[in-house]
Amino acid sequence: MTAIASSSRQGSHSESLDSNVSHTPPVGRIDQDEALRLFREASLFELGIMAEETKRRFHPEGSPVSFVIDRNVNYTNVCNVDCLFCAFYRHKDDADAYTLEYFQIKEKTQELIAAGGTQLLLQGGVNPDLPFDYYLDVVRNLRRDFPDLTIHSFSPTEIAYMAEIAGKDLSWVIQQLIDAGISSIPGAGGEILHDDIRRKVSHKKVNAHDWLQVMEVAHGLGLKTSATMMFGMMEEDWHIVDHLFQVRNLQDKTGGFLSFIPWTFQKVNTKLEKLPNPPATGVEYLKVSALARIVLDNIPNVGASWITQGLKLGQTALRMGANDMGGLLLEENVVTQAGINPTRKSVEEMVKVIHAAGFDAAQRDTAYNTLKVYSRG
Image (cartoon, rainbow, N blue to C red; front, side, top):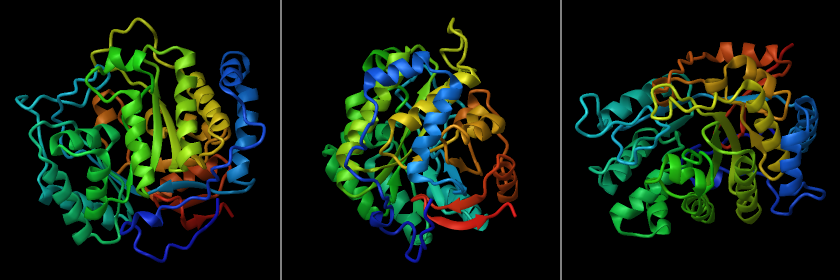
């Protein structure tokens, strides 16, 4: 991981979110058939070794493991998409439905800044009562009040909805968000990028093509983004592999993904809670994480999802291709509703966890620029 001095305002311009990803496909990369064979037949140990080899193309031996001080602010839980896997959403007439006003978002952001945070993640439901100006006003106000903040916000699903309510195309909507002050886009809502699965669990949500289209347009306008995968619902192994290759193919075209983060479906309190298949295991998570690192040979960072998988599995993933531990979790409301109760971590605690896994630790910003290194020595 290269330490890059961050001398400009972190959130002011999308151009500051840069990476060293080449658009030239690596020589000897595996194809989709080989990836599926590895997923089905290779041992966890073999996948881990291959994933570590791929990781070292971006992060040589001895590179620190990174983390970011961030906060997830879920500005509304009102949503009309009704995903079967979501325990967070409410309908607007539910007693516990809410939509935050700007002063509430500002208070939460002030707490983030006071904790040394650099990244704010805004995500909510698809609330049919919110006009496009709501989103623009929130971003403009945040940029005015916190000029150095990285506003890493709004999933492709939310942005597609904004285009619908504004009656404009994606390019116009995303440019308006850029002009308001947005810095980058998170990869939420990817789940499994195959419509066989999406029709079953989230038929009102953007389809796989539209999710990728939002990302492609954003990349074309200079925004960097992340990509994700949530697995362990009712997909088959080839769906997982197909998802990875759709992400890889778009990255070959645009170079706009900075990171990829997989995690497992948490079914408590969801409409899929009574699925007959057991939840994905820790071994399955590690296999998917390692395979992602092998396949996504054009994306520089793979995150270990300690929030859903726990710290021990997160540490293990760092030895199987992952290089980042994500955020400190100053606030989290979505997976908490699904029965996961991750504990907020301080910088000191996260550094200790990373050191215990055998790595130096580094605080980063959203662009994976190193802000501070914490050496084990």
